[in-house]
Length: 150
Image 1 (cartoon, rainbow, N blue to C red):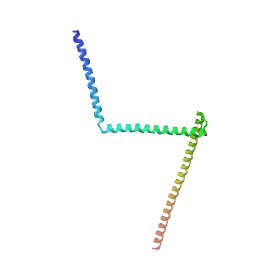
Image 2: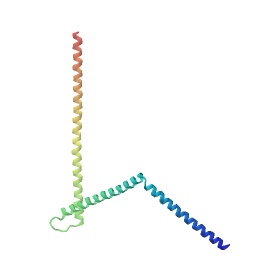
Image 3: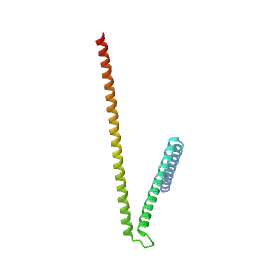
Image 4: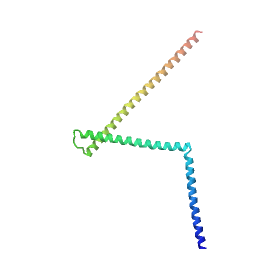
């Protein structure tokens, strides 16, 4: 009886193993079939493109930061003297403030320009309205003259 029990256990274990392998193969087949669909390909390609775009943006940001650091160090360094990190930080902060001030001024100029454009637009509309009213008055006057003359 003991050898039969061991044999049954071994057979049950082998059967479980075969079932697991069958499930893996079926899952692999389903995955391969899903990969053949255009929708999956589009999603995969889009994800790859987005990853590449993210890397591109990150590299551009790193280059910009390196340029800022180099510019700050170049401004501080001058004629061959050693540059302390504190001086570079101060120069970077100064450059950042200058850039912020520049952007603020640009925004102010843009706001003023938009305001002038809006005022000009309102003036044109007002003039067009007045012209239309004058035209209506003249027509009404003509009609009254014609009616009076009869």
